[in-house]
Length: 110
Figure (cartoon, rainbow, N blue to C red):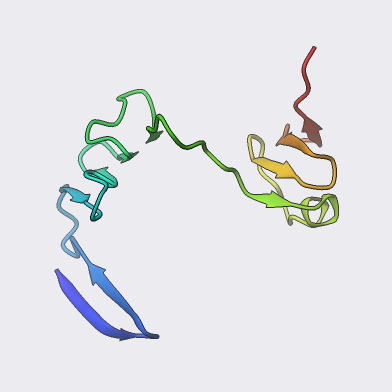
């Protein structure tokens, strides 16, 4: 592990430079298990110490929601080479959008 305190005013910790699978946990003052990374499986958990085995990212909360990236329609349309499955909130339309591989589609109710 190395520590660089002179990184543009931000502390930087480098863990696992040797490439061995390790798990680690970051805890906040009032938030136990704020971030968990299971190096052996590649799972990441936020708000949980046991990320779901079927999810790459498991965000757990009973008081807060997931917030995807937010941008205007013009900003969305300017995303260079979007990838199928990308999700964002279009603030101009007020809708969640998914890129299908061919076009951005809004998610609407039936």
